[in-house]
Structure formats: structure tokens, C-alpha cells
Length: 192
Image (tube, rainbow, N blue to C red):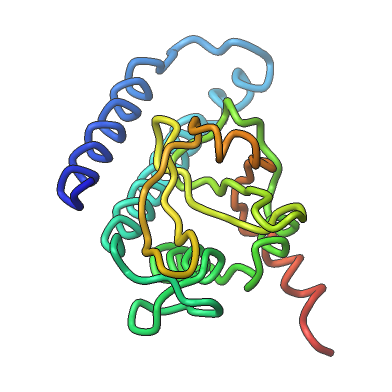
């Protein structure tokens, strides 16, 4: 699939998410927590944070799409040298969000928050068992059941469908990056 077609599909997917997000606002608090937040004027701030996170996730995915076609290289973590799967994810988060994830896919899984597959949003991480051990491969979810990743030697960064039987059989889980969890994991793993 051409790079432009991928970007067009991504744009349409993100536009659909934005439309759904705008259609949901509620002006009436549903429970006590929402009432408390509304009374203190915090619902507006919460809405801003949600929009900011959505915007960052969109920016992350668009940035990642800019690297379609970069060759795979084991241990690689730059466009100049090529990427392996975790190097690609790490570089995208560092460049776009300013967050440095751990280097290996299994470490990235351990440093991020587990979410249900049906709760995936663009920018979340998806993990696969491709080397007969858990969390041996990672990619970035782009929406509509697709993810972008750097798959293997002789290949290049590309978008694939998680619903293909190969990926379905190897799916290990989905994770969401949260700054406190990643910081705590990095601190625990840093040399003292």
C-alpha cells in the first residue's frame, strides 16, 4: 500500500475518532464524582486533558507514518540506521511525546498499563509473541484494527492488520503509555 494511501486512511480514521469524541459530551453530571468535578470547575480541565492526549496520540501516529519504508535493522533505533520493532516505538515516543521508553519490547510491556483489546486507541502499543516468548514484538496501534511496526530483517516499517490470522494467533496484549508508570520502571531499572 502506498505511503499516501496509508496517510489518507489514517486521516480518515482519526477524523472518525474526533467526530465520535465530539458527539459524546454531556452537560449533566452522571454520578457524584462528575458532580464534584463540575462544582469545582474541573470538568473543563478534564476535557482539555482528554483533547490534549488525543492530539498527542494523533501526532504520534502521523509522525510514525512518516517513517514508512525505513528498513528493519536489528538493534536499530534511528531512520538513518534503520529500526527494529522496539527501537521504532521508542524513537516515535521520544520524538513526538518526549518520553523515553525502555529499549526492549518486553521492558516496554512491563513499563506500560495493560488495557483490553477493545479499548485500543491510536498511539497505544500492541504486543505479539513472534519468537516463542511473550512480548517479543511491539507496534503502535493506528486505528481500525491496524498497527505500524518494523517487522523483521529484509523488511521495512509498514502498516498491517491485526485481524490477519498471523497476528491474531500471536497477539500478546495491548498497553497504554502513562508517564508515571514509565518513569517508575525506568527509575527501578537505572544503574545506581
